[in-house]
Image (cartoon, rainbow, N blue to C red):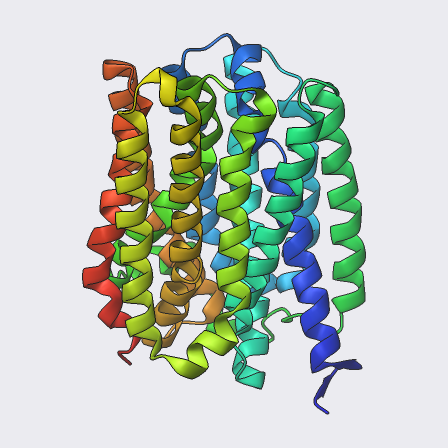
Length: 398
């Protein structure tokens, strides 16, 4: 049995999965309650979509620097700082009514989410390289499971428990649990770099930047559907179909359930199919399935409201299972194709993705503001998912 600093491989993997799970619970708790956050700020759909993108500023800074910081200071130190900043910002952001204050805390959340993302995925690649097991995809499944638990809780609590009490409580609990897990994993976490000659300076962050355009574009295309559903799925369902707050969260829950199922099935699927061929099929299931069902649902008459709702559930389920393995698989391809350390690769891929998806988010928010149609804007991520099928060949290339 393989051991690392007193932890068996299975023990280390379980703790990593637990950390991903808690991370999913903590960062996605507020998503199903976006309509209330929007109302607190007194903003229109278009304005709220625009202000949400300010988190990308913090995310960009985090992705540009976090890989180098993790490489220099180690996973543990980065997680300790990022965890405190992340969950204290969540406690604050749901209590503000000023768009200016919202922007400040949203930037802090974007920064700390990306720092945490880089750190825990670096640990995932570290375990994967030692064991040969596809830990990164399965860990993403546990993150999705955490997001699902949050969506269910939020759907139940919406209208019964105040926004600040709900999100603040989840943030404090998630922060404490994360610190406990980091403490338990402390001896096996990727350490600080002990060779100063291999450290990265501020100049090196820019001069060593490696842009793998095929992986970066493919990655952005596959993850943007998940981002769009996270940002707009609940609002879209509630306003388009005029259903209750609880029912409006169900399509997002269904999306997450099918995403979890796909990610946790990766060992069986990878044993039966070539990964790049599987990825290509998945892009088409997600893209064509989502675009076709949502298009039909939004053109049915009001009298067929529940038929439309059923089509929403089908479309979100196809999007979930289709996109499930794609993000982690493109990330693994980027890591395999780059000479840089895993932490740096994750950060650099994230920078490219942040730039591309920020432009897409502004574009979609602009369409919503100009046309008033969330339905039309939601077709864009579906079409991008279909286009991603042309980039899946990078998954098999060295």
